Image (cartoon, rainbow, N blue to C red; front, side, top):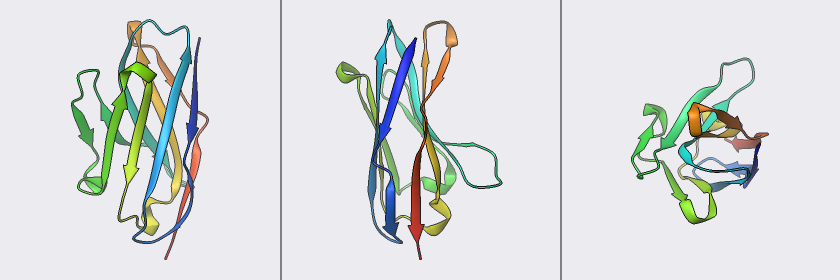
Length: 116
């Protein structure tokens, strides 16, 4: 079993920045892709950014140039640096990791609210 603990959400004004962190612990043999997804009220959960074990990053078009994903493999931790935040970035942000055999684990979610 793998546990994911997220931190760093909160309330910020438009144009501001936040940094999310997600630390994985438990029976971890190999973590492949790590990523962040978000879900706004009444909407589906969408991919925000993912990063492979080799460091290749992928972003949703809506966050390109504003968000940066990174990971520390020694700490089994993934980060999301969010800059120039907009009200439409308001959502619950979920961390997800893909481990051996393609099993996906999700964090509990952290609220990000951007005021205009």
